[in-house]
Image (tube, rainbow, N blue to C red; front, side, top):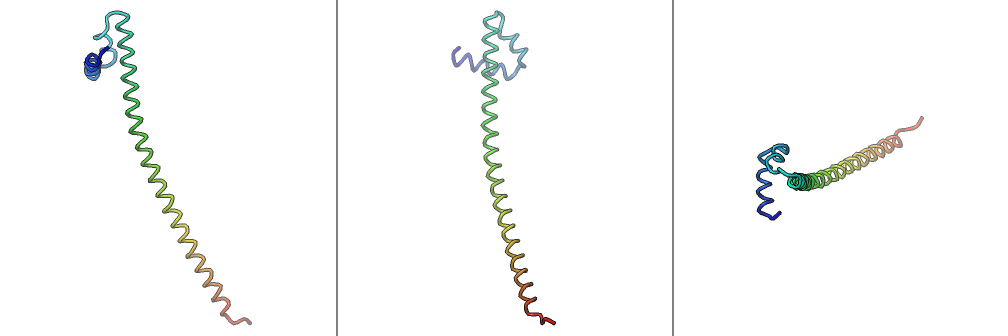
Length: 100
């Protein structure tokens, strides 16, 4: 099958469902096999395109997740520093209290 035939079949396939397409483009067993092979290749190409899009989205989401994890870590460190400073102040004030 040359490129022009493939493109014609592709255009026809996009306007028909698979069963109608199979009935319109194959009368013999050999044509039916070739048509089914075409439909399989077309579906695999569509899958590959969709997987590329999804892989790109996954990469973006992973970057966003890494950013959120870094922000979470920064917040935890800031909280820890604040608590540590408050503990030191509390201990310092306790040392200043007169003991009975």
